[in-house]
Length: 63
Image 1 (cartoon, one colour):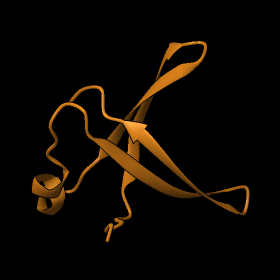
Image 2 (cartoon, rainbow, N blue to C red):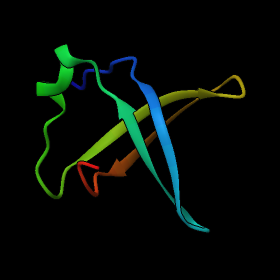
Image 3 (tube, rainbow, N blue to C red):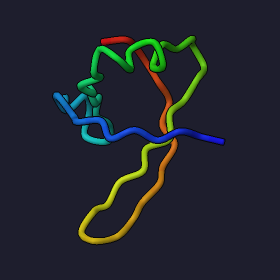
Image 4 (cartoon, rainbow, N blue to C red):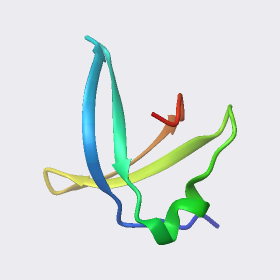
């Protein structure tokens, strides 16, 4: 089962016209849970314009 956490977005960086990098503001007490290895992905669960969305994203760096 996946655990979801309320995590704030710290920064969004436009990489190309079709892609962005998102830097999350991970609290110190959760940093160990967010360590990753190449090839892993995260599932983002968010409410956008009142609609609940869930998407999977590849982790491309530790920025």
